[in-house]
Length: 203
Image (cartoon, rainbow, N blue to C red):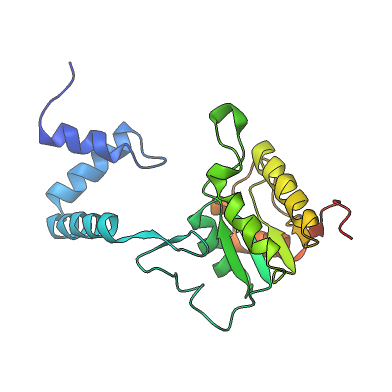
C-alpha cells in the first residue's frame, strides 16, 4: 500500500534528483529530519532563493543570478574563441579542468529531431548572429561524445564554415557515450588540448 503524508511526499520529491532512487531518497529524508534539521531548513531556503533569482546569462546562456555571468563579465577573457557546451554544468567542468580563457556558449541540449529539438531550441540562431559579426576566430566544440552530440558538433561546424570561422572538436580521452560532467579532470584536460579541426573545408 502506498504511504501518504508529508514524509512520503518528501521522499517522492527527493527522487526527482538525478541518480536518486526511492531507497536513497528515504535515507536522505530520514537523515535530514532526524539528525540535521538546521541544514535541511537552510537547504530549503537556499533552493527557493535560487529558483527565484537564478536565470540565464544574456550572452553565453549559462546559469547566473546576474544579467551577465562572471565569465562573460571578465574582460580578461578572449572574445575571439568560444567553447560550445551542452549544459551549464559543462561550463563548470571545462573551466575547472583546463586553463581555457575564452568564452562559452551553452546549448541547453543537443540536436534531436525525434524529440523536437532543432537548431532554434539550442539557440543556434543567436550563435550564428555572433559568428556573422566577424569577431569570432574559433569555435571549440565540446558537446558530449554521443550520437546526438557528434551530430550537433558537425552541424555547428558547418555553421562556422559558412562564416569562415575555424571549428575544432575535443578528441582524445573522452569515451563514446560519455558525458563531460562525469569525466575526471585530467582526462578532460587532455581531451580539451588534443582537440582536432572539423573537416568542413573552411576557406
